[in-house]
Image 1 (cartoon, rainbow, N blue to C red):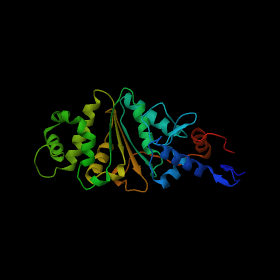
Image 2 (image 1 turned 45 degrees about the vertical axis):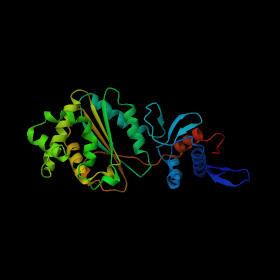
Image 3 (image 1 turned 90 degrees about the vertical axis):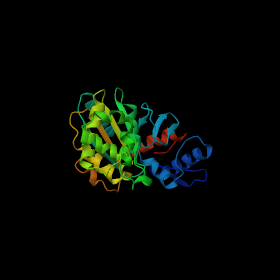
Image 4 (image 1 turned 120 degrees about the vertical axis):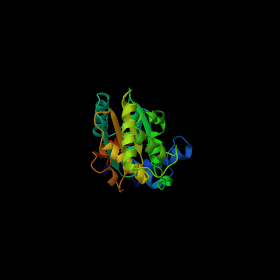
Length: 270
C-alpha cells in the first residue's frame, strides 16, 4: 500500500490528509476544539505547524500559549527563537520577519515565544484588515501599554507620538519623529526587563504603522528588545526590507505522520 494511505471498511484507499481533515471536522461537530470551519484550511493543516501535540491521542489544531506543547517538526525554528530570547536577556536587540503561507504556523511560533519568554516583558499586537486605512492604528495597539512613559521622551518626539495617537491636537506628525519616539519608548521600557514585541498578521498593518515599525526594527542595537513580525505570503513586506527573515514551510512527511499518529487513534499503514 502506498505510503500515507490506508484502506477503509470497504477496501477503498483514503489519503491520510483526508483522514485528518475528517477527524478535525468530527471534533468541530462535537465542539471539542476551537478551530476554523474553513475547510480549505483544515485540509492544509496536516502539513503545517499550527498543530500542537499535547499528548498521546490529543492534538490542538489551533495555536496555543502553553509553552509545554511541542511544535512538531519545528526544531530549527524554535531553536532560532530561543537564541533570540537568550540574546535579549543578555542585552542584544534584534528583529525578524516570520514569513509563510496562511495557516502555516506563524502564530504558533509567536505563541512559542510567549510561552518561553520568562523574565521578559511581552507585548503583542495584530494587524487588522478593517483598520488598514487608519494611520497609526497598529502602532497604537503595540504602544498603548507604555504610554505612561510618554513624558520621558524628548519634547519633539513626545509631541509627535501624542499627536499620532490623538492625545493632543495638531497636524499629522512627522513620521521620522514618530519613529524616533517609538524607538526611545521601547528602549526605556526595556531598561527594566527585556522587551519582546510580537506583531501578528503584519500584512494587515496600516501603512503608517508599518513604516514606523520597520524604521524602529532597523535601528535596534543594545536595548534588549526583540521584535517579531509574522507576515503572510504572498504580501508586500517592503516596509520591513533589510530585516532578517525566518521562512516557515510545510512539515516534512515523517513529522506530518507524527501529528497524525497523535491525533488519530488506531494504526496508519506506512
